[in-house]
Image (cartoon, rainbow, N blue to C red; front, top):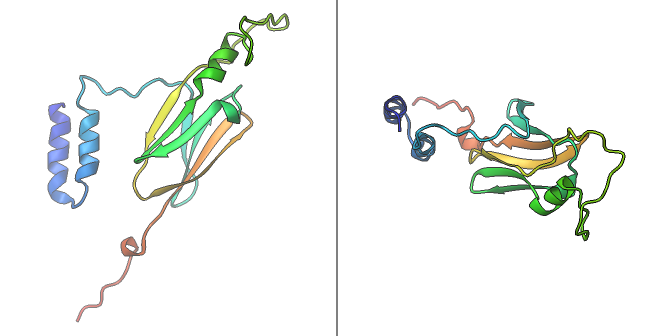
Length: 158
């Protein structure tokens, strides 16, 4: 971990209660020589759609619902292409074929349909509402659930 990152987390710990797991998560991101964000394929947006609502939009031209897995486990949202169908399509094989098909109409193949895996860390109080693939855009909708205990309340002074 870099000295700068260590300094930031050490300064924040005395000012907060119950965030040790968050700091530990960020510290683990600094463990290697550099922070690896990963590939920028496929391109994506994170959009705030309301005061407590968010969408992750992933551009997936050429993919359909059966080519994609969206999973959530232990605070991590993962969007991944299915290897078998994507790899077969990318070399010109249809399911059940054992040699590439000749596509005499394909002059240039510029739309990439390759394997990818994108993971996003999701806070404990964020609920994934659903996912929709429409017009080449996968949209995963989420909402931050604010429990009653965290909402603003006035404390009566006695």
